[in-house]
Amino acid sequence: MSSESLTNCEHAIKQIKSVMAARIKTNNTGEIEEIHVLAGPGRNPKQVVRDVESVLIAQFGLQVDHKKISVAQVGDEEELLESAAPSIRPRLTGVTLRTVNNLAEARVELSAGDQILEGIAEGPASTYNKLRIFVDATIKAIESFTLEGCLFVADDVAITVLAKHQVAQVAITMLAEGREQPLVGCAMVGNDVREAVVKATLDAVNRKLRVLQNI
Image (cartoon, rainbow, N blue to C red):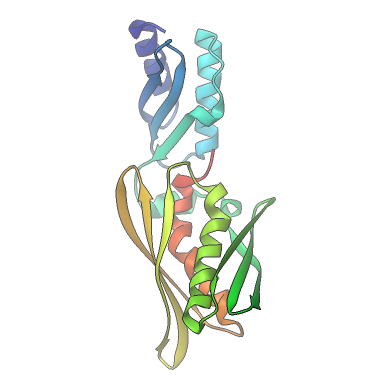
């Protein structure tokens, strides 16, 4: 692909509704390797990806794998959250804990629309670490739901008391594009402290999944 063709493709992508910027990366043979799109809030990233595919094949005869197209959205975070379809926010459906020979295995199952996400983590079966591995299992469950290159790292988990109620608190670091962002989440402890830890983890990361959804 010549530099002129590359410029024409980027210009065409920029004409798509809500797209603010576009950058195409090619390999040594001129084939498209990555397409990075910056879009405003209000549209589902999957819609933007489909529009990019349609524009490229209709105007230039280029068929590009949707996995090569990444969409980042910018704008007011509350607006992004409100425009998100409820189905893209994973919800807890089940937790299990198995302990054998001082080792604990946590299993977390989430639902996201018609998808079932499952994460498994294990480690020493100390009281604190059993809570920690539920955070890890939750993170693993949502890994397939986020863009490649984005990672969540569990920093800490604690059960505290606020107004005489137990509250699960989770601290997480999000790593994306070489940057770190701290995230925190909390949830009231009901009948199961493990479920509260999972819900606190989701509370920390769910607000970011609108722009990190795996497309």
